[in-house]
Amino acid sequence: MLIVRDKNFGIKFFNYLDIAFDRHINSALFLISIDNMTDINFNYGSEIGSETIKNLSYILRNEKEETHQIFKLQGALFAYCILDTNKDEAIKRAENIRKIVEDSEAFIENITVSIGLLLFDEIKYIVQTPEDFSSSIYNIALNRLRIAISKGMNIVCSESSTDNYNENIKKVLIADTDNMNLEILKISLEKEGFKVFLAMDGVEVLNIMEKEKINIVISELMLPKLDGFLIKEKMSMYSDKRKIPFILMSYQKDTQTVKRAISLSIDHYFKKPYMLTELIGIVKNKIKGEI
Image 1 (cartoon, helix red, strand yellow):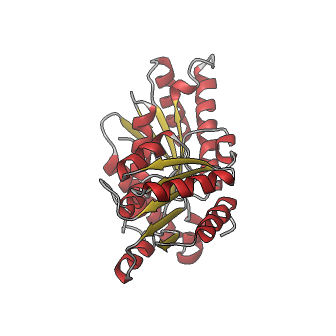
Image 2 (image 1 turned 60 degrees about the horizontal axis):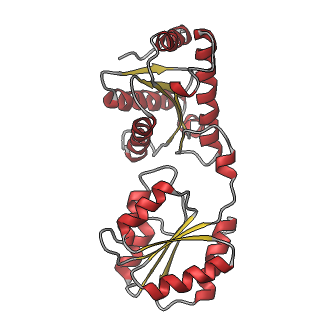
Image 3 (image 1 turned 90 degrees about the vertical axis):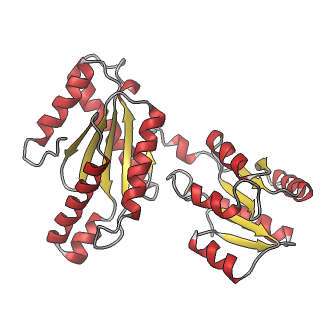
């Protein structure tokens, strides 16, 4: 493992990228930045700020495997490189790091990290020299890190185009075992111009979300395979899904289930039978970002 702390960190980091280019190894680069570093330095002082960076370094070292390299760059910025990987594996690893940091109790207060991710193969065959490759891969990963920060932080960004983040929000996923309720909601939402996806169990919900960029979920609490609470828990593990608005509906609504919904940051909890106009209005406002 390599944690670079001296003034020559840039040379060592870019030399590593040059070697990967020469050997034609498909690797992944994560640029990892502490989101609330400025607040920590302001509230607790630079000494605690330095301790926070050391604690993050410790977490990254614990995650490191034999084919991984870690570089401490300037400030609260780390480079984490993985040899011989693919995009799915790299995203999974980055999400795991993000979640471990978010859940860690090693810091003076809860912190999060944003991560910009790039696979070397994305640009390896469109650059001519190792120098062009090294600078390009760093700049693209840095741009993706900036996108993650601008989109609310605590996010893994693996795409450079902001078009993917600004597309019209029109996809609604509804999960229920009641066919009549599904059909009524589907017709009502389609009249409002939304594209509607239907699911009848929790596993199907997650499968649809892997294939489609869903913008809001409306779920019955009592579903086969995974209930509404477990769906929301699974979503919270992924930065691209954790902030998707989630509306729960059920005939079962009591103090215990309401407390559980609040702990999971569920946006709204409707008790059946609900007022259709109210639910549709909530969906429209959520999609517009008004509430």
